[in-house]
Length: 234
Image (tube, rainbow, N blue to C red; front, top):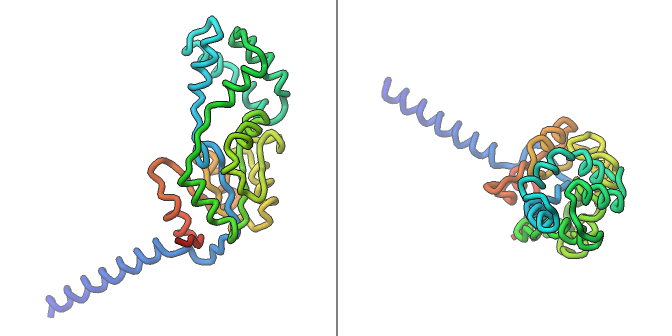
């Protein structure tokens, strides 16, 4: 009898484990995702600011390491540019003074902007969802880099709405930029999934009841989207 009891308990444990597995991999109850809000940098396109640091050092008496130190010491300038509080002309003037760089405005912004490359698998995946979901881009960026990206990478211009920090006046993880993205999506927060590569941005989004996916190099985005109820064909 004890043997049969043990076998019955083991069988129940197996059923429970299988049920838990199905629950984990099934779409979340009542998720009903209607919109997808995605970051830009290191999601749809990769970026490497070290490319800019190296090139600006070539027209400056500063070494590359000294350039990086200057950047870290003047982060508020970059933040102000990203929030639209500084014009491109002012940014160029202040940045070239900080770096002691001898370079004209056009050349400066070329090397400042030319740091991106496409993440085609993610671009293709999200683009395939545009007929079934409201797609909103939500990015911390400045007017010069966003203009450059639109010109060089038209492949990423498949979103219905674009919420960018230099227009909104706030940067992630400030709640105001998420609220602007939710408003543009026209759906309830719990009906939206937010994708970003920075944990602090994900945490801030969750506080507003957005469903989230933290994207890192090991993330299977297709699988994560399916887990929360996003229908992906093919």
